Image (cartoon, rainbow, N blue to C red; front, top):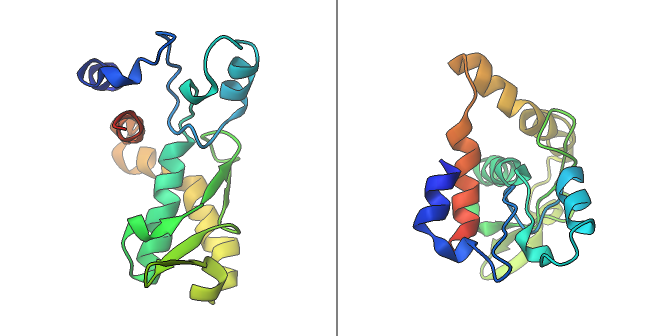
Length: 151
């Protein structure tokens, strides 16, 4: 779980001694942003949100569609909270091709897929996991947190 991960990786305990873990310091949901704005003594890099899980899912889906490694997909944004109301945004996504980041629109010509199936799949993935397993995928949410803690 996240607590075990944090104990194993003490670098997560930033200089202030407080680290509000929600997932990726690159992404903010409303709760993380509100907390950050009301706790100015805590460095902004200590706040993250669980949309990192959704970002990972979005990158994996795009990588699968393109037949490339997940590490080749960059700049995918998840707007909103970790729920079915989020908006996975691939408009700024890039794909590493020959060592150069190319806009997703230059590499993937299926814009209709990006605007429909891709968005819906990312929005509904958590619900699909719960339906298939009969319970939440708590470990799925923990893994991105651990990934962020391993600077």
